[in-house]
View 1 (tube, rainbow, N blue to C red):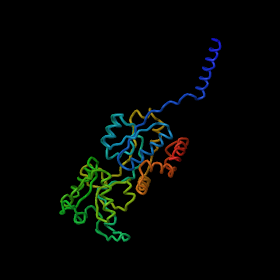
View 2: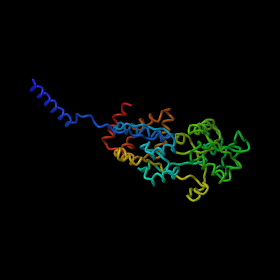
View 3: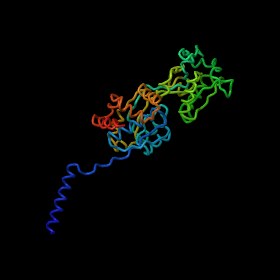
View 4: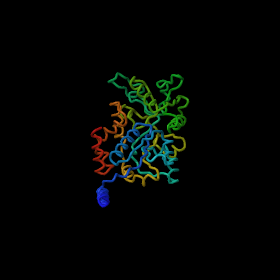
Length: 336
């Protein structure tokens, strides 16, 4: 009996070794990747798309960490976040420079540099009218920021009728400081008040509400955004961007900003294949505007837009990943 039991044990051990050698062992579990989910539309979309690719293509679990720029970037520096996707470099240059000097982060690349920002955006119908909507031109000679004093009644502040009103972004955004200083530098502070909205959604609702009614509106906006992709808007002319002037008093147009992807210093060792993907990640403003307009038209969430993009814009995102990874993602989203 002992000989029989011993023989059985030898057979079982042999089978185990064969199974391990043939790949029968459980695959090694991959580490969790913590990815920023910054609080504006294009960043939301990109985070959702990256999550699908990383999970379905590369097999890593992903946690999207929601938040705003400053706390998210500090989290990246501290190692509480692995990937920071769609940072606006010139808007947070000081913090990025400090993080690079301390060797806390690694910059992987820039996803685009054809974006825009402006403190003085108006619906085009304010200047040109809109015959299809029965809107006559309200300010046909409005071309430059320097023209604004003569139109303060058109953009009247209901809380202070002697002045016009310029809508600013939320407190804590870079535009909060820049727009106010530009109003002073351009000599508009005697004619215009500035009002901060509470959120991106509040800013867009203010513009969209005025646009739907054919009413005058002026304020801060940027692209890529769904609203810039959906509405006909005009940026008032300013002096061309000049770095010295900008640093002194912001008395010129906003610079185009480099949208970047950065990771914590330890992440290249943690997920080198994902680092390679993000080093190739590029989406221009026209593409992002298309996605954001799609979200508006379909009333979809960023996750819905990510699935749509992966299904319908393969020529773009498949450039970021190897062919075998792309196929896994295609197979996965086919059922989504």
